[in-house]
Every structure is written in C-alpha cells, then in structure tokens.
Image (cartoon, rainbow, N blue to C red; front, top):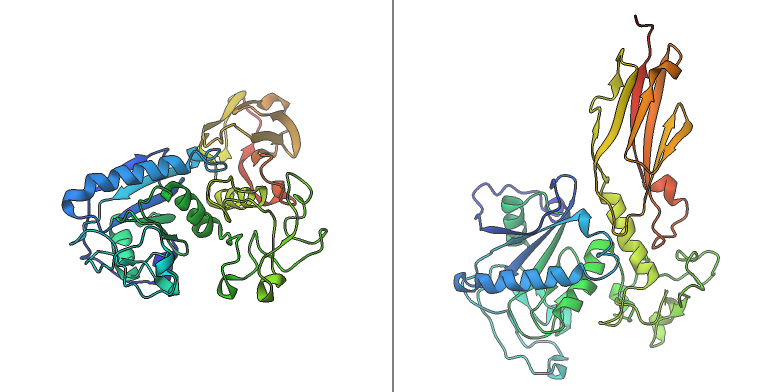
Length: 371
C-alpha cells in the first residue's frame, strides 16, 4: 500500500469510522480493495457521501476493462466525518476566472483539507492532509490497494497521484475513471499537461520507431499510432498512442494501450486461484483414483482464463476445473501434476504474456507399491 509505505508510522489511537461495503467479491487478501473516503462531509451528510461513493464506483465498473474484471475487486466506503462541509478554494490560481460557474472563495475545516488551486491549477483539487489519510486508512482498512477521495463540492475538479480525488460535479463519474487511470495504472494524461508531468509511462514516450515503441503490438489497430503531443517546445518530444482516449477527453473509452495497462496492473495484483484440493501439495495415497480440483476461481467477464493440466510435463487436460488421476498409470516414483492458468484476453497484447502473468498449482505425487 503506497501511502503506508511512504509514511511508516504507528497510529494506535487514530480514529475509527463506520465503514460500508459497496461491493464484495471475496477474501480481502486475495482481491483488489478500493477504499473510498469522503472529505468535507459532516456527520449529517454521511448518507450523501455513501450515495456519491456508490454512484461513482458503480459507474467505474461500467467502463472496460474495469467491467471485465469487476469480480477481482472489493469496494469499501469509510464514513470520515469533517467538522465543516465543502472544500477549500483559496482563489490563488491564475486560471480561477476561467472556471464556469465561478467557484466562491472558501476555507472549511475538513478532515483531509481537499483544496482547489493545487500546484497553481484551479481545477486540480488535492487532499493536502496526507497524514490524516494515512491515519484513517491504516486504522480502518490497512488491506487497501487503491484510495479514492470524494470532495463534497459541486464544482468541477479532480486529481490523480498516490490517491485519486474527485468532486461531485456532474462530470465526476468520468473524472473518477480518468483519475483512477493515473493512480491505479500509472497512466499519463494524453493531453499535454506540462513539462512537470512528462516521463516514460505506458501511454507516453519519446520513442518514435514503430518497431520499438512500447505499444508496438497495437500500432495500426483501431487507430493506435504514435501521435506527437501538441503545442511545440518540450511537448514536441513526447508521443501518445491515440487521439480520443479517456486519458485525454472525458466521455471517451480508454484506448487499447490504456486498457492493457490497467489489465496488466490487475494481473500483477491478483492470483485468480483462490482455493484448490487437495490443499496439501505433497500427495501420499494408496487410492487408485485421486481427484484434483480448483475449487474457487476469480474469472473475468467474459471468462478468458485458459486452464491447462500437465502430468510430468505432458498435457493431459484443458479448460476444466478438475482432473482425476489414475495412479495405476504411474510408475513407482515421484510425479508432478501442475495446473496452469493464463488470461487469454484480447485486450492485452503484451509480449510473452503467458510467461509473465500465469498462475500455477503443483502437486508432488509419491507413487509407491501398495497392497
């Protein structure tokens, strides 16, 4: 968990808040856990926060590839109580006058100090009190993987980074999907955000050779190419894969390159094999038939998991959850039975995917003379 890794502190007396479960697919140690917290919601406004958290998380999982991997996620909402309602607006950014409607100056006392005008950009609303975020998350749900802050203001704004932040303005569902692309999958903006935000990322590069660019497997498909960022100067050194991606314009789908980056992050966090039998991996049995089974799997929708069973390195069965072994076919020695899962989704074209993101269970079977 990135925030706790950044701040290794002990908060034994940190405040506990009520927590709601918005989506539960299983064991928190085996699924990806998104934790949503409100900022600027008073005690009497907590139902409003839960309504906003539900609406925003529901929308996120209508967007591919989140929708394809919804079964991989749990979502929890922590009812953080602020002393005052709203979000800060110090009116210090040079572009404050371009906001429509104009945002009134405000300075409420909120738990995380979410504020417009962060880093000189009006719409960039950022929770300033990282210490309180770490306190709340470490005390209330330390198993988190991703944090989303909802600032209780009707004006347009959001941000990515260690946490995603959004307001409750009408565009907020799309803002959350965009900002989660930053926070979860380390995606760059596909509009040019300035030299501060330029670096090699899954969807940003200086490479212009189609054979070497990191998204080379997508070039020429569905409009994916190598497009120069706008505006000249430093921006001319940087390239993006698409022209109408959600990471540039709200209301559009993620481009293929960004979809792949999100899926690859999911694959890096989740082993879809939840449980199996026999649970012991060393088998000593005199039974003629031994049943092996994947009891519980986390499956994408549609299910793109490929299952392969191998006995001593030779394929014996495919795409079934169980396998029955007849020990009479075995010699009197130690044998191995391995089941391997690979996600064959067409939404990812990463080189050597099957050797990078696969999951296995291997049983050692000691066949001895019986009877």
